[in-house]
Amino acid sequence: KMLAGEIAFSKSTLKRLVDQSVNDPENSKPQIQNLEREIQEKQRQMRSLEQRITESGEASIANASSIEMQQKVMRLMTQCNQKSFELEIISADNRILQEQLEKKCTENNELQEKVRLLEQRQSNQKSSPSCSGNAVSEEYVEELKKKVQSQESENEKLKLEHVQSVEEKSGLRVQNQKLAEEASYAKELASAAAIELKNLADEVTKLSLQNAKLEKELVAAKDLAAAQTRNNNSMNSVSNRNGTKPGRKARISDSWNLNQEDLKMELQARKQREAVIEAKLAEKQYIEEEYKKKAEEAKRREEALENDLANMWVLVAKLKKAGGVLSVSKSEEALVAEPAMEDENKNQQDVILKERQVLNSSPEEVIVSKTEETPPKEEPLVARLKARMQEMKEK
Image (cartoon, rainbow, N blue to C red):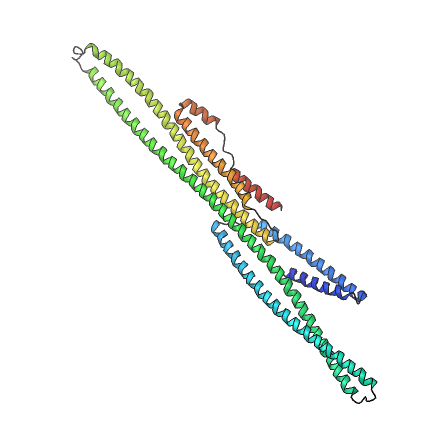
């Protein structure tokens, strides 16, 4: 800021020297060259300082949460209000200075008119034979000339102050506009982050509900399997007890053989059903583990998105401080957010279809589907965010 103020002051003095060089070009030429060299040197120093600020900003990027972003937005809004208040004060001072300048100009014109009249009187008195009051009139003219010169110097000072106030006013307007743009961009980033976090929370709740349903089904299947095993054990104990008692063979009828064969067939069918139920239980356990993994991946993805968003905000803030203006419109953010939501919905539908196929298929098909599964690809929104961060770093 100091360098920018010095550059503005040097430019104003350069303009004044250029205007004065019309009367005396030889003496003012070296002064103009010196001022131009000073302005170039200060601009070079300003560029080097901007490079240092950008490098230090890229090196010191830290994590920030959505609360910190809201605080920064509030801070930027307060700064914007302060700058607008300062701009109003400077504009009021500028008006006062302009009124004073106009008053001084009118006074200067009046004094010049008086000097002109006195010179006319002096010339008339010189032409007339009576020259008794020449000394007094000359002293009075000299005093008036000194007053005119002092008024002209004051007018020059007021003009310089007016130029400086105008430049400060323009600089404050630019800074106010930048702060307003930064505040709007920060609000858009915070809203996008809130939407993304809400979507991730909805996904986590859906996964937790599905996990609870699977746990209930698993408990019911375990109870059913335990009841069937108890029934089989009781039937086996009854058959063994009836077959080992002596003296009962004479009472066994021909229908007992048929019942025994039916019992064997029923036992085999129950064993097959138990094997199928055990396979389904194993499948449900595998699906439950997959859901747990997906929930953990969603949490990790949420944390990664928060970190990427925080890094983006810090990088944007540093670039804004360095003088770069980055604006992302709402239409582009909508174009970025809509494909991401569509991809998430497609992924959820694919997961539900795969679960239905797993529940309806046999254990062998489940094993084949497990081997054919591919690792999940990276979310498109995360990839776009990383690409956007890389582009901003290159800029």
